[in-house]
Image (tube, rainbow, N blue to C red):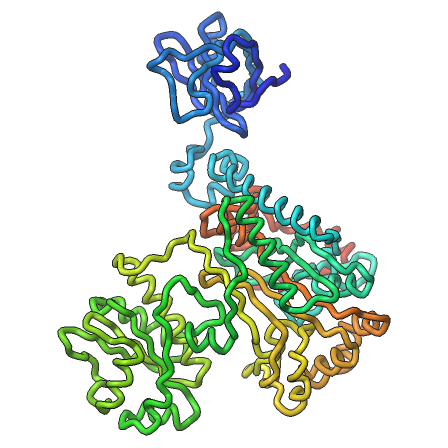
Length: 592
Ligand code: ASP
């Protein structure tokens, strides 16, 4: 029975036509001997009436069975019209029924509300049923539309989509990798590509000039709601481009996607914030700018203070910072305890705060403050009755990080009280720029690349590479939205000598290791590497935002659980001794 229409198509315009439909039984109802079936396909639902010899057979249908029908389009009686349904004015009076498959009873209701109530593990075990739910179907459609919009954009800009290998080589300085044993080369391994970074740079040397890829990346990291072992990036690299060029290119893409998918006009250009300013004002390099509660530096105010904790921090070149959680003086003791725990987990000794009630500053530390210190706080923080002021005194970066986190928590507490709104559909995109090229890693006792070792220093800072590496700014940029880092990239080093210097002299990677890991890249650069730069942007997170869901698992057809398992196909699994032998692998299982 060949389908003539889909299940959201028939209207009064089709009255009395003979049509065939196919799909799943959404529901079966018996109205005094007449059987009504809501027939569902990917597009929607059509009511089918069985009022003939087919009645008996139709009555036996179970939900989620797959059928095909032929019949005539008839108007519904006036009292049965459903205005909420595109097909709500008609029904199909069936004259033929073909049953393709009778379904067992699904383990959970396949409605949006019904599925939301059950444990996610059950949904993942029966993912093919979960994906039948309207909202999951919509998520797949949005993902398709967003990805197509991205492809159309880059195509129109003259880009080539080039696939790069998933099986790459181990370059252990990034995230932990998935290793794949080689059968042909005993004892040797491929690594699954963490990102196409090196290939896309090589493509620039190859003269491709404008590359993009909807690229799968693999990282063996602990999973969270926003992380998967394999995820998808919109990956881009361009020759002869500068930072401004990348910003404009990428803003254009996001503008198009938001228009195509949500019919929303994103204002461009996005604001830019230097890393230092982001840290100073928001305490984090991915600020949520949907609300204020900005941090203020009081190091100068407390330089000579009688309050020794603050004075000695400043004397030791640390910072005293504060922010006003405006209107949060009604904070509960339980909430304060939770905030203190968070501050401590970030290295604070405690969390100093002042509650302002009935004109009185309530806090054990206030008695140490001079009048001028109080005046400075009042003025710079706009302190008024009902406010709650938090402090951090620590080395600059830690003081920022502590208050940055407390600021986010305070915003949640204010939102819970209806005193602050954090709308999910307010799109505060921004670029964070001017990151330091290198950061000092206490554990490794050396410099590590803030972004990755291929990022170019800002030209006028190159001279500082030898004398003061931490003062060198990188040509690195991040795209941030509402407190989430969605993507990032950089203008790259294209001169082999400079790249070698960064590897060996700044990052202190031994020359033989540089040669074995990156020798091929350095060699490629000696054959005419153009200046180039690029960016990568998380597609899964972007689609989740467009769908209004917080979990990227909701926008990936077959995600892994947080325990790194595929519950449907039941993976991972042990393999046979023969397979292991072929791969020259022995396993040593730790005792339980
Ligand atoms: N490859 C980088 C990443 O995956 C992004 C880039 O620099 O283009 O984070």
